Image: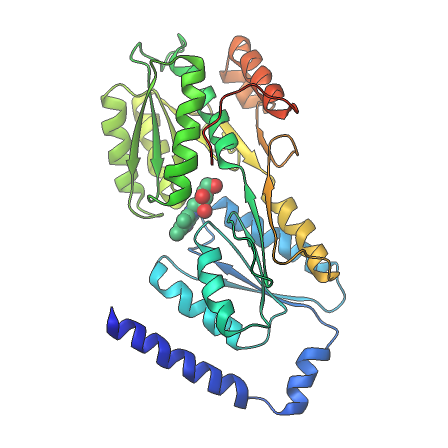
Length: 348
Ligand code: RBF
């Protein structure tokens, strides 16, 4: 650990020296005064299989394309999370980007750290929360509301007489890894939603340990389905595929998060929440380009404001889910969208 931080300090010193010497004063002035708007999009993982990452990249690209002379560079950070701090440091030290954009709850702390060394670098971080750093703006989705909708739907399914539902009242949640938002918001929200249907419902919570191992996710899912679980909410990036495979083999159900992808497995994927991540990336990016991004603040996106929803309009949802369940979903969505909801939510 000590060697690692020593190496990191040496890297920082090197980068600062390089950053100061690698361009002439004239060049530096060009960077500051140029008309172009240059953005680095840092993917904390890989894009494939992680819709929130895809949506971020698309939203940013769309906004920059509409700007004269804008440019976007997409950098995949890979699955080794220990390298992300160094990689963001390299981006900031290059002094090439007006803005570094990223997404996930671990990024604010990392960018806050980098920001201490490169105080001119601005950051726009989605799906994360940090207030008070004048160079960082964050935009987080209310994970309790989102997972509450998922839990409520899973609760209705497990309490139903659908083909894949037994009488055990068990639902499942599989996560790529255990992180604070997962344990403090998503899991409690999921549980609260299900208990709102029936307080006897229990949640089987399992962790893959990474965001790509579909085989491990498949094995976990098999064990959950064998123990009586009817439906699994999967939040595991590329590993989601393993959950779908297991559900197909066992005639059980999958619930997606963030993006509804019913067509990937009709009759297996039977429910999904959605977040408007592409719209958020696009709209906020436009503000940043116009110089209007509110750095230093943290915004929370809710169901009421239209940033989070449950996709109960898709033809495949309507085909596989009964009218009775859909009416109840519609009611809970309306309740969450109203000013004075009486729903009991975990504090987050
Ligand atoms: N979600 C993904 O879909 N793919 C990922 O590779 C991924 N990596 C993550 C890494 C860390 C350190 C953390 C804290 C979260 C990660 N997530 C990932 C979860 C993601 O940010 C978000 O919470 C979920 O996608 C639910 O919206």
